[in-house]
Length: 354
Ligand SMILES: *[C@@H]1O[C@H](CO)[C@@H](O)[C@H](O)[C@H]1NC(C)=O
Ligand SMILES: *[C@@H]1O[C@H](CO)[C@@H](O)[C@H](O)[C@H]1NC(C)=O
Ligand SMILES: *[C@@H]1O[C@H](CO)[C@@H](O)[C@H](O)[C@H]1NC(C)=O
Ligand SMILES: *[C@@H]1O[C@H](CO)[C@@H](O)[C@H](O)[C@H]1NC(C)=O
Image 1 (cartoon, rainbow, N blue to C red):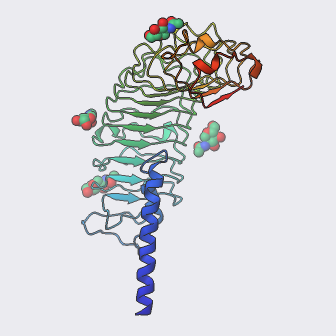
Image 2 (cartoon, helix red, strand yellow; image 1 turned 180 degrees about the horizontal axis):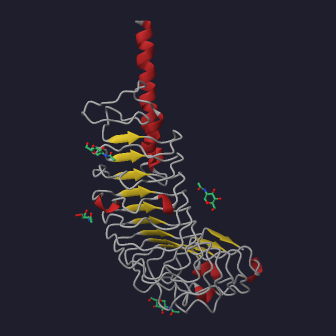
Image 3 (spheres, helix red, strand yellow; image 1 turned 60 degrees about the vertical axis):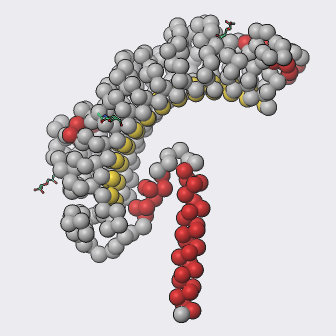
């Protein structure tokens, strides 16, 4: 019985440990990241393959009896898509060497809710023209990042909420998914979004950083909260570009080619904006920002003057800037260039770097 107690204690500690980890990982980027980790645990080692539900499971995958709607086939060196039984909702195919999606590969997979295919060797040519993505009417998450795609697969289901297709070689895009809230398109070769975003009425996070854009995409969806356009070649912004984006809180445009001339006056004098990153551009002046802005990043530009009027037009007891972070290092000013009245206007700034 001494052994038994020891075992019980260990189990207990493992449980405590797991619970301690959960909230931590929930703070991370992806609240479901802990779930992908479950695949690391093998649920049974024989090459079974009828689970308690009566559904089959291909030999190369695991379908845990405790969670039979999931099928784990990730990280097993697969080069070919396994057969997907129709009851599977969560399909993990990431971190393999899968090169193709044959026409009929998903014919039976009509229950899918998550389809994880990131980190494979997919090319657009090798995705069958007859693959029926559109028939996956419950699909919500589709992860395709880190493949070799040159276009977005056609006929994606309108049910999608989270599409990640960053780190591919995509040049042209077109979407029609009313429920999409997250779109990761970063690290591709997109030169022009034209009006492709128009129909994405629910989109709240759009990441198109590290592409080849020269202009801000037209018709940005009105629900956007986060817009990431860093590391493109954008040199100017359209007139009243933020006018209809009343939900927007975070704009990141670091590492572009923005000049003073390219930014229409009052562009950033909009309430609601929390964070604005214009670092590593070619600005010579501090753009006018709203007094409600909290974090402003302007490092590594060519700013020569500390214009307090960019933050406050009047300074008194009730009108002052809410700015907390201001980074101005890597410009052409020094601490002496900050006027003394700055302490009134920027009274909430906990860090100003010059
Ligand atoms: C789809 O299901 C049918 C009936 O169970 C089966 O005969 C067929 O082989 C399956 N196709 C694929 C591609 O899995
Ligand atoms: C992806 O494309 C690049 C460039 O054409 C090529 O060098 C690389 O081998 C390809 N990788 C895969 C996974 O096909
Ligand atoms: C979009 O989401 C709504 C609300 O959850 C749902 O009723 C609707 O069916 C979804 N649209 C599609 C095309 O799945
Ligand atoms: C900035 O916007 C506020 C609120 O809309 C407005 O009162 C203020 O005059 C604007 N500042 C400038 C310099 O136009």
